[in-house]
Structures are given as C-alpha cells and as structure tokens.
Length: 478
Image 1: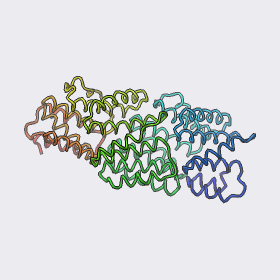
Image 2 (image 1 turned 90 degrees about the vertical axis):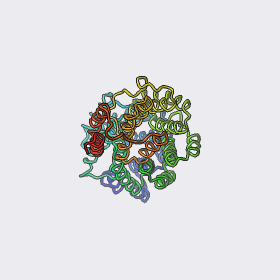
Image 3 (image 1 turned 60 degrees about the vertical axis):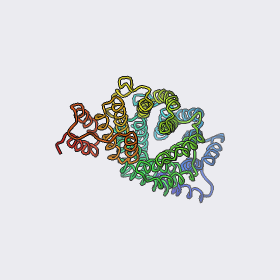
Image 4 (image 1 turned 135 degrees about the vertical axis):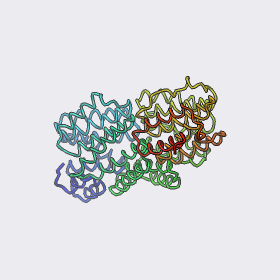
C-alpha cells in the first residue's frame, strides 16, 4: 500500500469513511486499493461487500503475497463475526502462514495478534501462552507505532477479560501514548471503548462513561460501525448502573440500527436490554427477551456467559431457585474451562446467594464464600459483602450481617452503580433488616471485619475514604 496516496493517508489516520469515499472516487483501482477497500468495508460494517471483494481478489491467479495475507484476514473476520468460529480460526491460521511467508513484519505482527485474540476468546488467555510470545517477538521487529499500539490494545482486552485489570490499564496507557505523535482515530476510539469496560470493573463508572462517550463520538465520526455497536452496548450498561434508564434504552435502539451485526453483539444488546428491564422491575418483559435470544452454538464464551449471568439474576429475583442452580452448575464449569476468572467468581457468589435465599444450605462453612478475593474487581467485592451479609444474617449473626450489607451498599454507591446499591438496600429492608450496625453495639468481630475491608479496598482510593469514615462512625469515634 502506497503510504503517499490520499486513501492510504486517510486509513493511516483511522478516517475510515473518508478512506472509502476517496477509493470510491478513484478510477481504476489498483490491487492494493482493492484490498484496502475490502479492509475498510469490513470496519464500516459492510461485511457482505467486504467478503465479496476479498474473495474476488483471492480468486485471481496472481496476487502479491502481502495482499493475499491481508485478504485472508478480512475473510477470517467476516466468518468470525458471523459466528462461524471454526472456519474463522482456520482462516486466521492461514493468514498467519501467508503473512510469515511475506517477510513483512507489520502484516505478520497483525495476523499473529488476531490469531492470539481469537484463540483466547475461545480457550481463555494466559500471558505465558506460546502464541503470546510469538506476538511479542513479532512486534519488537516492527518500527510502526500503530503495530505496537494495536498489540498493547489486544493484550489490554485479554488481560481485562481474565480480571487482571491493573495490567490491562497499563497496556491501554501504552497503546494510547504510542499514538501521540502518529494519531489514528480508529485505534483511539478502540482504546477508549475497551478501557471503559475495565474502568467499569474497577468501580469507576463515572470515568467509564466519559471514556465510552468519547469513544462513541469518534466511532460515529469515522464510520466505524462495529465500534458504534460496542459503544452503544457499553454505554447502555453503564447508564443502567447509574440509573439513567431512558438513555440506556436510547443507546440500545441506536446500536440496533447500525449496519454491523453479529450473533455475539446481538446477544450483548439483548443482555443489556434485560439488565435495563431488571432495573425497572419488569421481569415479565425481561424473561420474554431472554427466551427470544438464545446463544449460538459457536458463540464466544464471554458473551454467552454474561448473558447467562443476567438470566440467573432474573431467576433469582423471581425466586426460581432450582432453575437458577441448574444453570449455575453449567456456567461455573464453562467459565472455568474458558479461564474467565471474573465471571467464575461471579457465578460462585450467585450460587452462594441462592443457596442462602432458598435456605438450602445456611451453613457458612459449606458455602463458596471462603475463596481469596484480593485483586477482585470492585463489583465482585461489593457482591461478596452483600452475599456475606445475607449469610451472616441467616446464621443469626445479624449485627455483622447488617454491617456487611451496609458495606456493599457503600461500595456500589461509591463506584457509581446506584441501581445495585438500591437493590441491595431494598432487598434487605424487604426482609425486615436495617442496613448498618447498631451504633455502640459493634463486636470485636465487627471491627475486625471493617479492618479487613480497609485492606481489601486499599487499591480503590475513592471507596477507601468512605469505608474508613464508616468504620470510625461504627466504632463510635466520629
């Protein structure tokens, strides 16, 4: 690809719509321009056109090796987002084989990065995987800052999915810094949208919304349809957490109208719609949407399991405990197999909560509440205290139970997840429990619980101050 052409320059800057418009005005496409057009069409969400263009090019008797590898990557993406994971993985592997043969370090770096992400989407990520080492070696041979930014972005996504949010944020910071002297709007939007998910996990919903909104504006401006769908789904979830339900439904509607579509993204939008209905208490509509949108057989585990997590929460709220527990057993094994540790911990907490609520097993020693949770995302820490509060209340340690429930409310409210805080408070009050300890009646165990909580929350300064203040009040020192 000639870096001096107007189309190539627009693509280099991430201006996807502009690039396609320039190519459309060109008379007599070169093969390089035709491949670039296929790549841009894919990013614009015009998947069928992209697939047709890439297929036509590959059917030619003679095509440059670099262009052949890039076309193969386009076809792999088309199959992947259509939900045909086996066929896609074969094509990603073929793209790597063809890119290695070109001796073009940039094409090889990008092809190997794609293959790493797709394999890990299916089998789970471990930074020690051999393919991860291949990607690191490939990018060290490239002098292109965009290649380096793309690799950090990919590792940030992968680390975030397995719950290593601090490592993920370091990758996102490096990815963004590499674009300072060589901007690319597409990569910048990608970084913002992916980091917004990690900020959500760390319990900074306000900053997550800011990043997601910024990423959404850029995705819309450059015509990145897949980014617009991701932004809509992210923002809808974040708006639900913060109680902005009308805006959440608006985002879902806008995302549903985008040209890009895939089974996984449709499932994500359905999941988000159900979350909004759960927040408003419309369980009948939520159940209808869940039944109408079932995961595809070859769907991505992350999307399927987050969908199941929402379904289990609905069943719990409807007090259909046997159905919820049956699904939980399957989900726990699937999350463990896919190495999705954050989701696995979430399912284990849900299992404990349902066992307590159904009075199937109120004995704390037999509940999955003893696992270490240092390094957990803040939402899981809040959920842990909410469930532990219920467990303690069920075993007649009501004072300690109220303290943990109050701590869960503070954690979620401090994180900006107002709907979770509201639901925990209302559930406790519906069960005849107040939220918070009785002043001047705290036991040594209450104070020990509070001290341990301060250590758990040391990595979350915006929550730590609230918890320290509450601890002093509970001890009668404020």
